[in-house]
Length: 270
Image (cartoon, rainbow, N blue to C red):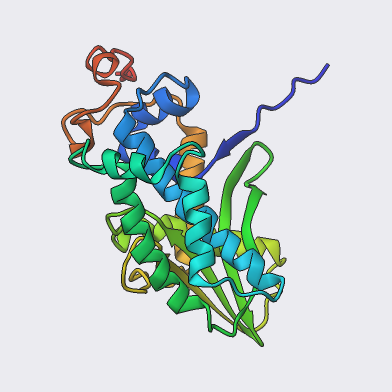
């Protein structure tokens, strides 16, 4: 009876983690070891995800030929962000209980950012044709690339393929290279490489109080090849070695103890 081939599923974050440290990748994805998550990180993740949900809500409404007002998307934010039983008094008290990272402070940041977002897209005459669409693309027989295209806008033969940045610290051009390459790869795969017209790959900053796109370079075929190269590197790696002491990511690494005791170095045959 033939053995079933195990299919490995990767996303851009996994590939990026492998680039930083192979052993970190193994512990996190192959062995799925526990990584402690602190309340501050949970708040940040929730902030990012809620902003993206509000953006999707706005464009789903636009797709139905109804453009939500700024008040409508702000109400949507508050409904998703604050607990149902939280009162105005609770918000005021909570605002003074924590020096940083409290719900009211994040909500103030979101209110300014969503106003800029509304000013940018409310009068935009491009039609949303894809919203928060997941993809799972085969990379050979035993590997797949997973992810999501946040938004595709179209006007005549011009397409805008947009990634939402919800990080409060803007990513650099280099750190977005894999994301943009994956977006192009997924968009072309989704359309069987038959898209005619101009396609721009963009990254919009959902956290900014001033409507703005993050500075990115348009992904090339070479960037897609680089994405494929790193995926194959993961597939073909037998021993995941640490980069202990060679990267700033070592500071605060949740796998510091097992990494310090790593003794699986490949044997050199003489």
